[in-house]
Picture 1 (cartoon, helix red, strand yellow):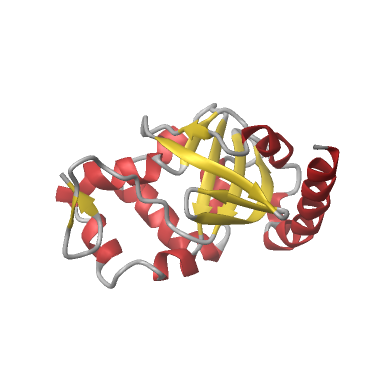
Picture 2: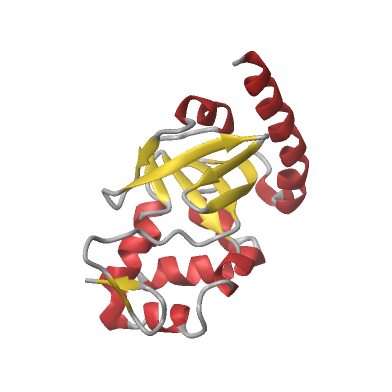
Length: 181
């Protein structure tokens, strides 16, 4: 167990270097999760989706929140047309559920993830997401955490390489590749 914690701590320290570079403007971290995300061009699609789902006020609130934030590259992995389809007003509920699946209530720092290895964390969408730690890599669902512990006034951001899509019972894939009831 000590080896696992030491390996994870070393990995987190290495990731911290790139986090500092990506969020050099964070300063004293007096910005909210939304403000920090909006200040980084690699979260442009995420911020647009948060706005379309009317979650800006919520994610700018007191929190604390842990947000697993997909990058532009993560959104690019989705089937063509998925994002455009999701941000349509008639799909606001579906988009909101997907975004809430990226949020865990409370502030979960990288050092705390070791305790969650092999367990499921309950998301703000009410659906659990799996947590795995293996060889210094942290996975949330099918996504890999590529940058950790971006401290914000109301929580923390962990950058992930894949958009998390909650599974639904009796779901059928839509043309855009998103499961629907």
